[in-house]
Image (cartoon, helix red, strand yellow):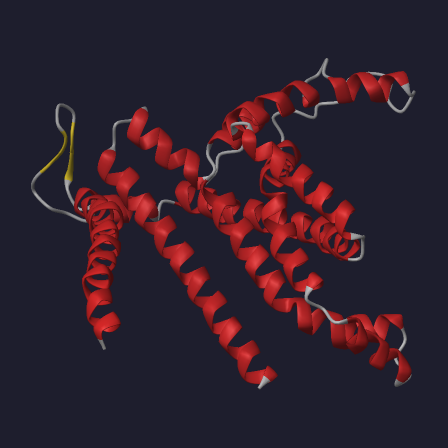
Amino acid sequence: MMLSIKQQPFRAAVLVLVWGWLLFLVLAPNMLVVGASVMTRDSSTFISLPLNLDAYRQLFNPLYLEVFLHSLYMAAMTTLVCLLIGYPFAWALSRMEKRRQVLLIFLLIVPFWTNSLVRTYALKLILATNGLLNSALMSLGVIDEPAQLLYTEGAVIVGLVYLLLPFMILPLYSVFDDLRQDVLLASHDLGAGHFATFKNVIVPLTLPGVLAGVMLVLLPAMGLFFVPDILGGSRNLLVGNVIKNQFLDARNWPFGAAASIMLTLTMALLMFAHRLSKRRLGEEAA
């Protein structure tokens, strides 16, 4: 009882810190964004009264709807490529001896020591018309003249995959590492082939890692504005670029705030769907 009483002030302090952090660094800024989204654009003070919903009506402009759908498409393609690369990589990584696992995981984490903006500019040098990739392809005789690799959708997807692939691999590696070998052996002993074991045993058991990786890649891919700016040019705008341009260039804070709210709600819906999927998987496992 004495230990419990002594722990109460510490617990109260932790709760105050946690809820204070959520209030001042999460809730309050988001409420300010919501408030800005329903105000009027002002050339001198950026926002002013009266309140209105003009910014939200502007979101339904076909031009901005197209940008939003294009952002979903690019994020989905990035997630798919990360999954296609990350799934077999995580499987192979989990089957290596521990020393090699540690080395490869270290190599996965090392790029995070460098600013992502710097790494994106480095990728731009590789994909440029006179860059390393074009030079290598021409030296090998694959192409006769430099290919247009930069300022394309493909370049943006490559950049997003380059930055976000570790976020797919690490949760997949976690579930693969916990996958018991005796379960796979039992499947083979019962007559299941490699494909049947993969489909009926491995995929269901690793699905939580897949869902976690998808969320960790899909959500940031919609908001990373500097990758399309550097690798995609003006023709490959994502919703993150629209938000940045409205705040910094057009000075249309209400519309930028409304677009931010739309992006936040989209991410919240995706997280809610992820939570429902996890709950359903838990019920099926039980």
